[in-house]
Each structure stands twice: as structure tokens, then as C-alpha cells.
Image (cartoon, rainbow, N blue to C red; front, side):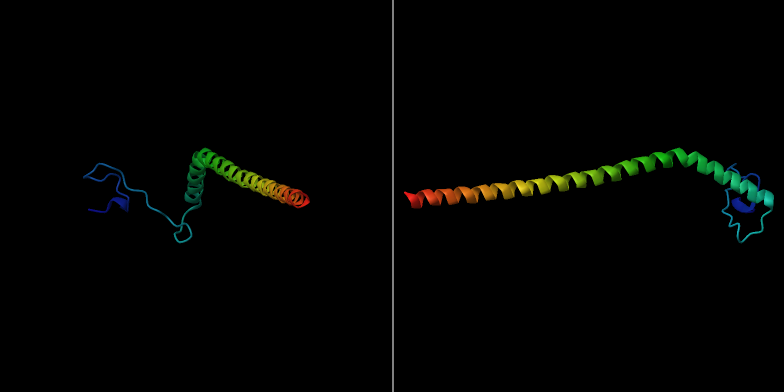
Length: 106
């Protein structure tokens, strides 16, 4: 008995049709009608998966954009905190200098 991929219409044991075989169009000689049919099937598969791919691309783009905005916002926040700490340090130095001036002036 031939294998299930050899083109038998039905496998006698399981009652199922033959399995699809992968064909390399560059190696095997195919007729223009077969090539056209392959193109039609590929186009149908591509159109079938297009909405899923589009949704995934949108979600990925929004995720990357959110990550970039989060990093950008955190950078601004940390820089503003550094300035705030610098200002506090300057005020503390000025307060110490005033305290020393009072202590030495009295």
C-alpha cells in the first residue's frame, strides 16, 4: 500500500484524505495554473491573518510608545528632583552661614 502523501484519494485504514505536501516551486516544475493557484491560496491565507497581525502591530506600537513616554517622563521627574535637592542644599548652606554669622556676631 502507498503512503498517505502519495496522492491516494482515501487512506483505507483511517478514511482520511492525503496530507498536504510542502512544495518548493523553485525546484519542482509547476505549470502556470499551479503557480497561480499557489498565489491565490497564499493571498487568501495572508488576508485571513491580516486583522490579527494588524491588531498585534497596533498593540506592540502602543506598548513601545507607552514605554518611551514612561522613560521620558521619569527622566524629567528625576532631573526636577535633582534640582530640588540642589536648591535645598543651597538653602541649607545659606542657613548654616547665617547661623554661624549670628553665633560669631553675638
